[in-house]
Amino acid sequence: MVARLPRKMQPCARGKSCPQAKVQTGKSMTQTPLATVEVETSPNPTRSVIWLHGLGADGHDFEPAVPYLVRPAGPALRFVFPHAPVRPVTLNGGLPMRAWYDIAALHRRAAQDEAGIRLADAAVRALIRRENERGVGTEHIVLAGFSQGGAMALYTGTRLPEKLAGIVGLSCYNLLAERFATERHAANQDTPFLLAHGTQDGVVLPEMGEESRAQLVAAGYKVEWHSYPMGHSVCAEELAVIAAFLARVL
Image (cartoon, rainbow, N blue to C red):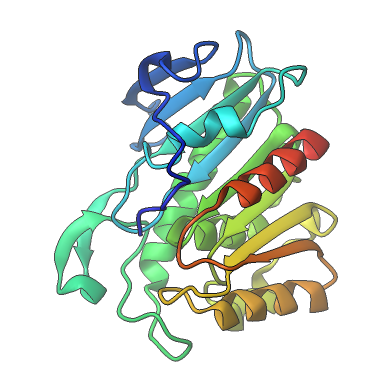
């Protein structure tokens, strides 16, 4: 699902609305086949944010949000926005589109694409390794995402055997929740989580986000929760909360 950003935001591609950023679009390294959009807030970044888009969107979806997520005196950051592979999506009549995994339906009892989820998990881990190879330790990486991308951020973040700086899930839900207790890894038990959801979301129902929060809290995770009177989208207030979160953990 493409995120609906606040109207006042304009794309910062080519540096037009965020002149201090360096923007790159191209193929990833051989460790991952995913192409990415990258925005560096200043030279030689020492911290990274890997941000996964929603169903049918692409890596450019949250690129315009970067100027609203950084603080002038903060460390140099690299925002990595990968493009999900193009695949047929059952929910949309089998039409091919960018998706991290197939979706049959969006309700609690729907069958989940376990094979696709695990392939996407491997691709996200490859992105983390690439940041490691570029000098950014996993403890200085935030894994974030919206909708389907947020679901992948929660999935990989709770199972990763290395500690992350933080995990952000927007308008999303826990994947393979029945496997969570046996598959989760202790490495990110104390990692800060930020979850947010629209109270009028008709795509990923608010109850799905609330159930995900409850499952994480019951397992002892530190979860910061915010809800907003909106649909399946992102608002300016939410971006301000994310910016504050990034400033704390990075």
